[in-house]
Length: 368
Image (cartoon, rainbow, N blue to C red):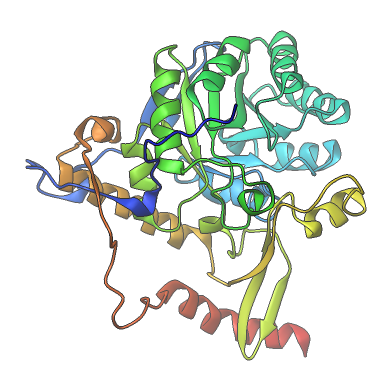
């Protein structure tokens, strides 16, 4: 018999964080670094727990170089070859502790992961990423990777419920990716009717993971720095970003000029664009579950990182959290019917306008 869960499930857009008395005098007092010891690998990591998604328009080597300077992690997309990895790793050894090698469950992917980890022992993270983390096949893959790489920290997902979070941690994963369908270029919810509002998913999965000394990543659904803060407030140990890091100098995707403005292509990894590029097309037995969009060019990603980190620091000052670690303990969410006042329209993105103004002469010169 079908079941109907009548308890409301919430997204980031459904809540705001209630301010609380604070003794902090300045945003500069807030420490955004976290130190984690991972349950199954036993490894320790310290840094700012924001991760670039393993999409080929986001999780690039260039992005890894830029984000590592601020202590962030990049899940490198799985379509780089071993030769690409060797070239990058030898040229950028200091960045290797801040990247994850990504794979699906196919044997060629897993073989490449083994090659990369053997070549570069400085890499500690492995990201096992599938759209549906509920299959037994995926659980078996996590067990196999744990057996093959007992001292590496395994990121696995995606799921949205507590029981599957526990299942993957017990199978050997250290960090569970949480999110089905919230991404800006994901159409899974439309195509399949399957999903879970992201805020409630993070709350449920974080509670389950922390009970086993595991960790979670809030993956997808963030459209502004306030959403990133809400993810951390809901108990996420890490927040993964795709669309918010797309459109930059370091992002993948084709650069397009239209009517004097610059854009970069951004697409979901289950889109027809991605499947045509990497698999020769959409297989007969499936449908595309992603879309392709043009994102206004935003210049170097350092400006966006500064904006995101500044927003999170400000959140912490509003609730009296001197460290990011304290944010979830200081967070009380309130249900709302309106987030922001847009009577004069959405605010212009100054970074996009500045980047377009600076980039256009360079593009014109390169074409002439």
